Length: 280
Image (cartoon, rainbow, N blue to C red):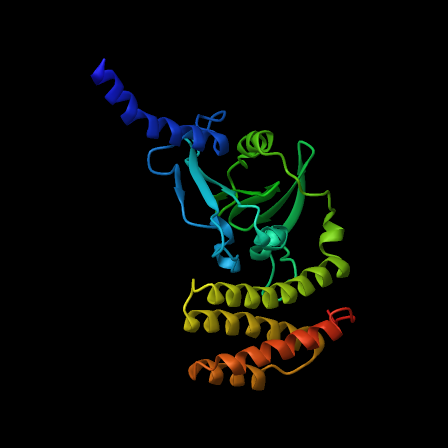
């Protein structure tokens, strides 16, 4: 009896972990695609595929689950990531951030970025040496990706459809023409400028709580302000070089007051100009 109890206690964490994975991942073969759990099903870090977008995660924890499937005949490997976001303030930018990698630095959709409808679900896809499929399901981000440089292998749509059944897309329908419209581009560009100033405030808030060092905060603020200035130069015609030189000079001096004053200046300018038309 005692040995059975000890064994149960030892097994409970593993069972709990498997149940947690099962809520997000499909832990079996999908059609002809073989599930490969040993080295690939795991929980790690914050933010998953949104890390490169500067998704702000210092005030919450996001959990990413990932796995892999392999087609034994074509040897096509398919990676799946499902990230559960934490219903924090940062989640308001999920749609904006989820397709950032599919756009140019200045927010214009890449020619390889298209919108597709699969089983009545809207998904965002990028085709270049394979396909990258992404969508939101509430505050979950789903990514399915594979590499095929010659584009000779069948798309793993069976995997995409199975994950859509488990995590239906909450994206609103949008046509390719709407995606590439001036209205859509303008909204995304202005949202990115908004987000960059918002990021500066988020870093300041974490600093005030004693959770980050001043140097780290200032580096991140200057980084986001430089993006804001680059966009302002591109779309509003205001030269950015002198402002960026000033910011980097203040950063080298660890001059928090001067950087804060510049941030306030940019906020005031943005408040007065954000509704104005931009030149695409």
